[in-house]
Length: 102
Image 1 (cartoon, rainbow, N blue to C red):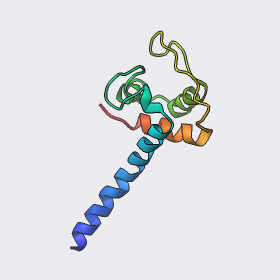
Image 2: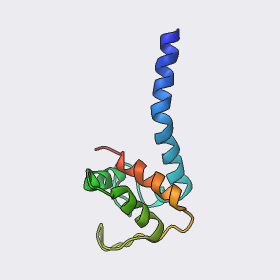
Image 3: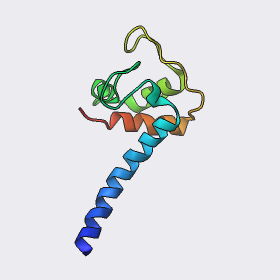
Image 4: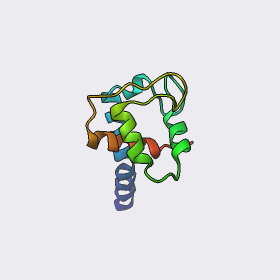
């Protein structure tokens, strides 16, 4: 029984942050244009993670794109600024996006 509870606690401690950040992405309407694993209007988060994998400053760059928008990074469709996301939330979202794996 103790082993089962320990295993469950370990799973929840790993899954909870990922789910919380996905919930944040949903609450900030990020999922209207993005998906974790497929392109919608914008790129899939897994594609973004692959593009920026191992790059220094990637989280800061993505956080800035989230707040201020971007243009020409993924093609002709611009990403509008998301004024409802503050700097802490943008950084949390950027780190979550970068943690997505193919």
